[in-house]
Structures are given as C-alpha cells and as structure tokens.
Image (cartoon, rainbow, N blue to C red; front, side, top):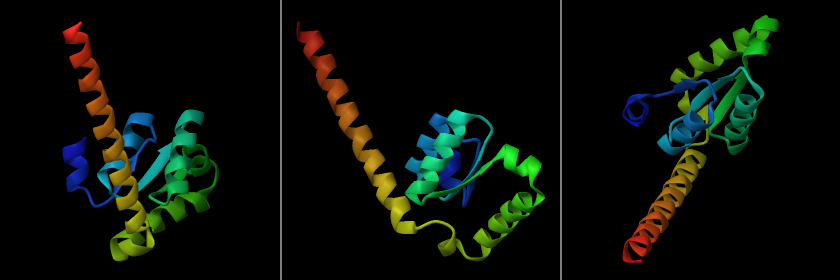
Length: 118
C-alpha cells in the first residue's frame, strides 16, 4: 500500500490498525470509514491527531446528513486541501512513526546480532 498511498492525494480507508499505521506513515490526509469498535477507535485516534476525518458506517446508514457531509468533505478537499488536515501535523506524525520504525528495526538487528554470537 505504501506505493499506492504515495501517489494518492487523499486516502479513504476502513480504519484497520495496519491501514491506519500506513496512512499515518504516508503523510497523506485521509477519511476513515469504520464499521467495528476497534476500527472506530483507530479512526478517532487519527482524527484526534489532526491527520484524518472519521465517519462510522452506522452513521452513514442512519443519517443522510452525514452522507452529505462526507460527500461535501471529499469535494472540498480537492478545492482546498489546507482546510482538510493540518500539513504540519501530517509531517510531524509521519516523522515520529518513521523514527519509531527505525529505532525498532535497529533494536531488532542488535538482538539478532547478540543471538548469533551466543
């Protein structure tokens, strides 16, 4: 997905944990559509970070104004990306995740080296 996300202007996703991680890592704004509690928590977390907008599928089915809000949100994104997600927040989250991944990768390689020596 990384290669696809890099080409996208806006990512629309289902708020799974792995996808949310990749979305945050991509530095791209997104719209999350959750159907289950775990997905809802993930989507709300991205929204609290200021890098995504989140909607539940239940709200889309039950409230036509939410469907209209979602449509307007996506259309407005392509007219004015700056109002959708804070670009500085996107970059800040992207860098933090890349730093954590680099640190975790380095720690993993050190552990492998230690195991190889014993």
